[in-house]
View (cartoon, helix red, strand yellow):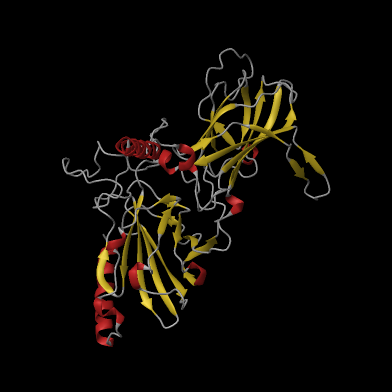
Length: 454
């Protein structure tokens, strides 16, 4: 009897382990979309009916990027949906559909778009004023909320026909999609909410929309790209060894085709370069490296002062196909509560859990280094961070001086294994001589200079 009970317990245990294993690898999307550093971050699309027309309405559609550090870069967002009835778009300002569709049944005035499933893109800078609306015409580029709330919004206006002219006859569109660029965002259904209120320029009169509905879209890195897009390397003044990005961090080199190191049979590395006239994306031309990542972040512990310590951060672009506009870097480190000064980068703390300040967002200074150029001699940006030492926590031992996690443009970067971090040498616990300290610092600086150029 005891043998039977033991066997049953063993079977139940194995079954439980199997279920956990299957759930872990089943691609459960709700968990994928949750971001612990930005738990309430999302993109909200607000659809406001401003006025009625003879056969429909005029609406303003506004895209709000409430994500703290994830932005929409070039070539910008593409918003799509399916009409609930036989609606058409008579005209648009601040945006345009990518295809007109079949409008052959219309005589005289031809609609802007007759497709059942239209796709809308933002207009480009320089669009004539009579075609613009507020917050439009930036080529679909939307900044993150932490970097600049004023440019974290994009809008367009459309005149919809064959839609009904009352709140009871208008139907909310279905199957909203947001590509920014490519996949990555999952949008929920449109939900009718209280009509939006608008304040006049003198703030003395309030008007409101005839009808309003919201759509919420959340981001999943696994949907956007199944392989990583960046990696992290480490070094320090007290150790002459540079810890490179892990081999095959984003992909492995192709050795079968000389001159092309991207493996055509392997996972695609993220790219936002679209084919002309097609909603497809070309594989990037990436510089041949052991890690094969488009972007590498290098964290170098540079100087140890009496009351402060200094870090140099370098971001290098290995992608020959694209520049990264309005890039940002999110770093987790326990000493961010004591960050004293940043040089040539902007900084803002991210505190998703109010009492804990161990995460910061860094981004470039406008018109100086906010554009990370494509691979080449100018394909890098760098800055230095000055931290004050906290006596109760500060140490160079066991990798404490290095970040716990780094994100580039919202994507999780591959970190080196913990046992590879630069450690203090055996004599590190004793006070080193000035000549030994100078020698080790000089050799580390020389190796770092050579490393960052490759």
